[in-house]
Image 1 (cartoon, each protein chain N blue to C red):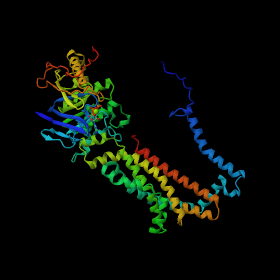
Image 2: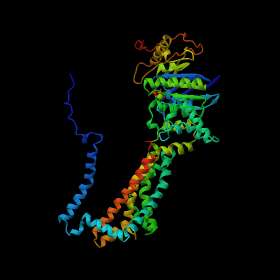
Image 3: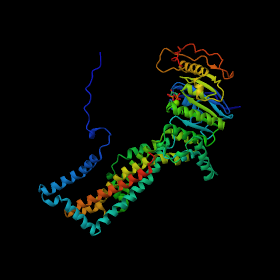
Image 4: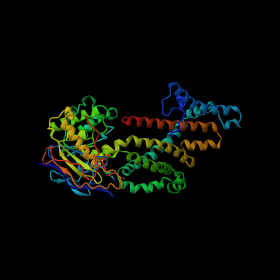
Length: 292
Length: 271
Ligand SMILES: Nc1ncnc2c1ncn2[C@@H]1O[C@H](COP(=O)(O)OP(=O)(O)OP(=O)(O)O)[C@@H](O)[C@H]1O
Ligand SMILES: [Mg+2]
């Protein structure tokens, strides 16, 4: 069943067309990753789904109802974390619950404790954000979004500012959360490895204007650990998607290389990685350095 | 062609290293100098006999004696309390008006469009230029003095509060909405707590202005207050007492600043 749906969504800022003709369906309980180069409109897409901005054309629908404003059914985690610096960990996580009527204090702190445990921040519950590491702050942000039990969890490059080790810890954490809670996750990242490791599907955004260039399913199964990142099938898919991101990335000021992404590649229906892919014709594809 | 090279910099003395902490001893020495040098200059000048007649520049000791004498008669306390009361009332009113206004300006674009042009203009009118008008409108009594303090501080405090409020990152507001907060709740639970330290900073700066204005207001027409006392003492050329009053004004100002700074540090522990 389709949970989240973007129907022909477009967004322009004056002359800048950030997104154009985006069609995307995120089924209930799935984990979909969106990758794209910087400026391809990933953050714009997220704020449209969150309801923080309205699209200039098309519609975002959740369970069939158009999204018109932000709400607790769509939890958002940003790269900066955006934790409340004056609230300690516990009160950051409890923020969403404070807004609910008829939720006793005892029940609230019991829930906060449960979510703090889930993200491994129990012993830091009285710490101020300034005393936390970047990874811990992201854990706060994730727990704070999850505690109000969103239908969809929106992640906008949540681990973009973290070092590799912390990032992988967080990837495992978010996988665990996803499997335990069964929430739907839509995640935006520029890290293709991360997208392939986490997603059941990876959507590639072309830039200028932002369009869906490819929609690939990740045939890795739902039980993954970090070692999967070294498997051949993982590396091949990763390289393929990295090529696509590169091919569909157009920076401004490239003048004559006016390219229109004529074709897009979709194999999500087939749900196998055997679907044929070729680089979009008009652009030179630079192979990334050989990876081992 | 290779780039020209520069010789490596000479090691900087630690006192001139940008933003580096000094040793404890150096700090103590510098702070002591900053107090003692002006005091020493004053003392040297007052005993040098360069100023004639000598009572026009009393020695620090004579000033202290005058202060003790005035304190003994209770006069100093009555005056200080009268001035303080005016500040509390006038600046208190200014805070009561400027803080909500500043929050509205910093939070809502409509508030900014509505208030910023007029306040941006009014703040350039010097408050002391209003004194004649205030006397005409409100007479020579307390209301005109309170009004002067109010006018002198309300505009600046509004604009500075608005600036402090505007400093909140949009991401915090976005996230609050996605957690289910309504606009009023975002203002109450996110915008205000985040900008509270900045607002107290604004109050601190403008409290100094208020303390200046109260003395100005009392120079004109008053029957009590530290400013009034200075005018009275001028008639009898009691310079030592004027110095004593000035010292009291400085000390009370310092105390107010200290109090506000402590409050700010407490409130802004998270920054
Ligand atoms: N509020 C805005 N006003 C004007 N232009 C905007 C606005 N927000 C985004 N844009 C433009 O829309 C395009 C997409 O921006 P967006 O932030 O969504 O990219 P992104 O994919 O998230 O990039 P990054 O990976 O660097 O975060 C950019 O060209 C940007 O300049
Ligand atoms: Mg972005």
